[in-house]
Image (cartoon, rainbow, N blue to C red; front, side, top):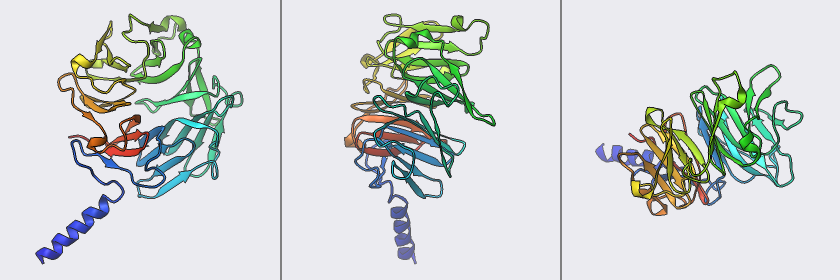
Length: 331
């Protein structure tokens, strides 16, 4: 009887890990082995409400809560063959997809589980242009679309869906938007020349609601990614390290403070720590415990991290240049 139970346990364990073989090392890293994903460049990822959505160059791979899979490509969806997926968001059962291509107005796509809808300026009222490089869902489920130039649009759920423009951030007319993040009522915008804060709670004078920091007041040339941290701090990932704002000024924490994953291209807060994705690996960092650099030697599909997202259960979804991985929620 004991041997029979032991064999059944082994079979069940192997079946559960078939899709994500667990590799050695801490934290545990499970790689996605499906042929649509394995070995391919992941450009974007999102996880929400039981959905995990992986964006490749011109197709998306969807894992559902019931373990079923779905793939959309130019052959069975409006995703453009010549476009590159720049960002994804899964929210309330919808999947948003942003694509860009040289000299093409690709705009936004939304899949509601049954059908696709396309949003392009000028038909989609409120979109500033069709070159969207960042999608951010804030803690209140507002969806923000960052345009490479000119600012951000916010999706408004109405009978006739529309967009609300935030286009008076003049700094963005001269520089490129890289990322956005909403911290309570402060909308942070990382650019290729500093960082901008829009205080959305102030309505009296729009221009006075915008603060900007450029080098050397902001201690780096660019802000690739932004997240919040303990004590209402804000962190921006840069080529030099983590730029941390305490409400008054910025301080840089770099190699001397244990930041190994440089440049810090992707940030995801995980409780009291922050995941940092870089071209050389992945790091789980905190002020008190910097953490070590995770690489292919630890089971990542590749050293170059190309996308990060946390799902609602705290699992880290990791996109790399050679496939995808999942790091189960840390205790």
